[in-house]
Image (cartoon, rainbow, N blue to C red; front, side):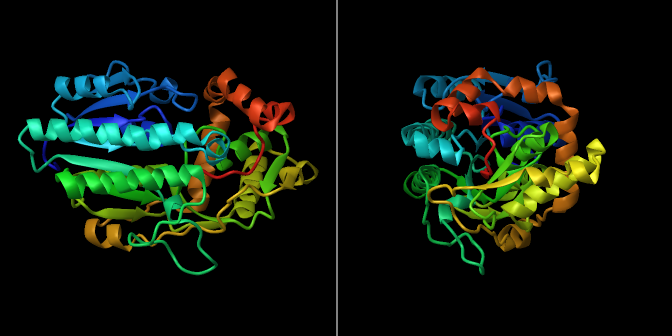
Length: 369
């Protein structure tokens, strides 16, 4: 696919990683075309791709990946060379309160997309250049102890309905490759952060709460460890895998930036306070509150990215502190975007599941992506 003028179907392209990837692809592969299929649920925001409306290489389709008729129409109308499947329900707490939504989107939706892609691939004579890239998570592997790393062959051991639904989707992608020959690849990434991330996630939530002087509740004692991956580095990895990855292969993508949740929150407090010129007696760290831990909260995630480094030459270019600073700046500099995503649908869900007090605080709890 590397040298072709390709047409890529991106699912969930109005979400956090999806919108960053669509922008990255159009900027770095002139002449390529992107079909963005997004259902525009609460976390899918067309404003994430503002400015692309008149780009001749960009087409937006509003729809659900579970809609088999729509998928058939998209594949029939476009000569699609690759699929980058990012559409997913991704919030762990939401999966605990409503697991069946995750089964529908993450499992059924993935299977319907696989079926449509396979039919199109066969109809076009099974071109060798076609790729189906399924973007998954390190959460499918469960929890690590203080030592060790996830690798591509780590046994699956999901802890939440979210991670179980993603694990199931991974298995179906492998089955479509092994049973039908579809040229499919899986990536399992660590926690992403950066611009356009919905503020239910740990980093943007804490940035906004610290800036607004709201409490910063952190699950348990804050010792849960995550490996943080800046979204721009992830987008580079996805494009590299799409172009050069081997069908049937899995690639683990990590930022090599392990931090405890408490360390992340404290860094955010310092960065926000510096940018807002706060005095020591106004320090945001005083807003940190430890709250009851979440059910099934994995202790530690960490990824060994040796395969993608050695086979494809990828490595992260951003260190955690500088990229976190860029992320803080982006949220402080884009209040209109922040306000636009704090929708009634989001507030209503928070109120129903966490109570009115938390709804008023934008679900101020220390959850991770």
